[in-house]
Image 1 (cartoon, rainbow, N blue to C red):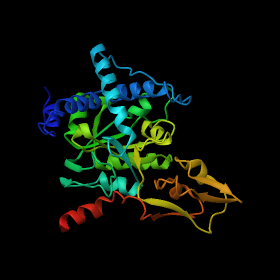
Image 2: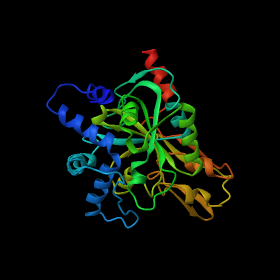
Image 3: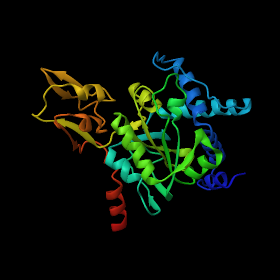
Length: 312
């Protein structure tokens, strides 16, 4: 057994569900594209998406592993329908928040973040060796025919997760520096894609990855559009001022379909906006800004969270 596998199993207690969580975390961490493939195949039976043709992993998968991955997916899917039961979910982040999360220099332990991560399970940020980052081929893009590129945009941050994926060579995993990780999220931001932090109960009820993806490929966003509470909003909403010249650039870039044109001006649907910030950076007139929405959960502002934790 590899050392990272042992360390991953140590994240759990000794309750009756421990073995199932350890197995689920191992299967998902080792073969995430396979798990997403089976998720898409199963969901397509009930909610067909003509824009997504599931693609089976190119690597050789033993039949018994394929069967276990199907069982993992079947076990996980029913719990995703509620914030009370979901153990696999994301949090939208602005670019500067994603950069801050990828630039932490010391080990941290932030728990009970329900005001930031509004789910009952999997809402801690506990990072050991946060400068250890593995970039892998995005399982959402890899499990879809004709995906957006590049593929290597998903980032496992800190141990034991990053070491697990590196030792198991998950999805062509390779070790990168924090500066390289920041460059990846910046390049994805330039493409108009969103950043999100993902949490999973079978990874110790904590953060396990920072993803950078798009509405056409991201499985979490697909679930969101089908009213599954898979992604929490950033805590901000877009605000358009009088400088708007009606060019409509923001409409095309909005990944959540929250902006429309009315009377030659851009309008934001506050109910739909997730506060990802893509529109702000893409507005040529600089007419868009993000404002804090107190009605929503708090932002994943690492600098503030770490400062608050040290003040306690």
